[in-house]
Structures are given as C-alpha cells and as structure tokens.
Image (cartoon, rainbow, N blue to C red; front, side, top):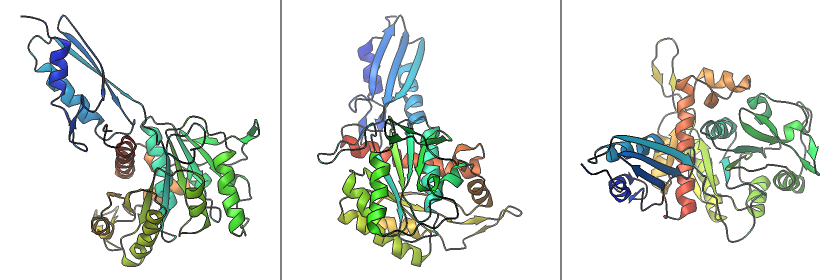
Length: 352
C-alpha cells in the first residue's frame, strides 16, 4: 500500500469546517504545516486566539479525518495560536496591544467589574497575554478583586502594571488610598484614562480589557476617542430596569461606532447550596431576549453564587480556579468573546 501524501492530507482536512464562517480550515488558512512520511503524518493548525472555543473540536476532527486515510499509521496534530490583531485605519492602539475590549454597563451594581476581571483571567488562563485597565475612577475595585495592592513602579517614564493571576493590571486604586473618595470632574477623568492608555508599559498584549464605569459618560467617550476599541461587552442583570439601562449603553457604543461583541447576563439565577433548587430572583432570560431583539450576540449567563462573591472579596477570581461550577461560565464567555474578536478582525478571511 502506498504511503499517504501531503496533498491527500490537505484534502482530508478540507472536511473540517469552521462553523462560524462556513469555511474549511484549509481554505481559512488555519493549516500552517503538513508533513507526511512513511505513513506518519504531522499537522500544525494555528488558531487566531488561544481562547478559541473550537480548539478541541478542530483537533479531534482533524485527527479523525487524517486517520481515515489509507496508509496512515500515526497522526500528530499540533495546535498553536497567534491572536489576530485589530487593524484600524485611524488612531493607533497602545504600543504592543493587539485588541482593546471594553466592558460596560448601563447602571451600577450589575457585576460589571466581576465580569471584566474574570474575562481577563479566563483569557489569560487560555494562554493569551492579557492586561486589565480599571477606568472606573470613582470605584476602582479591580485591585481588591485581583488580590493585589501597592504602588506601580516607573520605568523609562512609564508606569509598570502590577501582575496578578497572569494579568497585567493598572488601576487608580493603586495610586489613591482605598477609602479616599475621588471627587473629579470630566476633564480629570479623561486625563487619567489617557494616562493609563499612553503612559503605562503594557508590553505585548493580545487583549487589553477595560473595565468602564457604569453609564455613558466621560470615561466611555474618552476611551473611544483615544483608541480604536475592538468591541464592547455589555453586562446586565435580567430584570427590566437593568436591561433598559444596558440597552442605552449599547446604543451609545453603536453611535460612536464601537462594535458590540454581545451581552452578558449576570446574576442570572440562584442555585441553593443546600437543596440545589434553582430560584430566578431577578427574573431570567431577559438579556438573551434583548440580544435577539437587538440583533447582537448573547455571550452567556453567570449565576448568582456565594462562591463568586466570596472569591471576589478575597482576591481569587473564580475564572482562574478549579471549581468548574463557577469557572466554566466565565470560560465560555471568554471563548465567545475571543471568537467574535477573531472573526471581526479577519473580516471573514479566517475563523478563530
């Protein structure tokens, strides 16, 4: 029996489809290298984000497709990743940063910072290089939720982010006393956002996640005027009042031409830790319905869980822990965000 050829391997891999784009992984440019020698086949597939939710699916399907070829004795599938970069025509991203992902909400108290922190940690856990910019100057809570304190060092005239849980973090919370209120007008808010974007030594980042203050004010406008934001994640709770404000925030980003990556429903439901009964305290499904009505993606839901609250208070983001009951919702959201960013950046040329 003749040994399998590289052309035959590529033909088999064309049966592995990217469901987001309707293209096979060969046409999408994900297959970077194929070697076939005496029945031993090696395939390298390069994803456009380490957080690709289809990673295992691509690997399994590629392996099965090649193994089915006559003459194949051994198959090795190497999965790699190189994050696709946002390449705007106007305005530059911070040096070394490939994508800026904003996390916003229409009102306070919906868990926006919880989602931002855990989105960043989940992306970092997947293998991406991630930064987290806390631009909520009136309530800079990310240092506490990330379990770090102290003052950043200065190198070559720039602030050096403090690292925690695999994420580079910068926050006004490092520069003011914890219980000191920030009483600033708009220009000062805009100034600190500008400084954190331009005067911080972020290094090479696949994603810079920006935790915005609630509403549609100075910090939001400053961000979108200063840098080309790849997209925004809008956080809400299920009840109508929160959804109404979330939609206002979503519409604001649409008006300033920032793509909406999707909506996250936080505090979606409560599971009793004693009896396991599910209670929909704030109603349920409102964000999914609103996303469908508005024509944007529904990125996922996060339960109201005591462990999530405790982990945040203790500086242990659940997305980086081993408890799947509270880590998996954030991992799924991170995968959905990374996938949408990749597809958006590549403009239909490749999948995630």
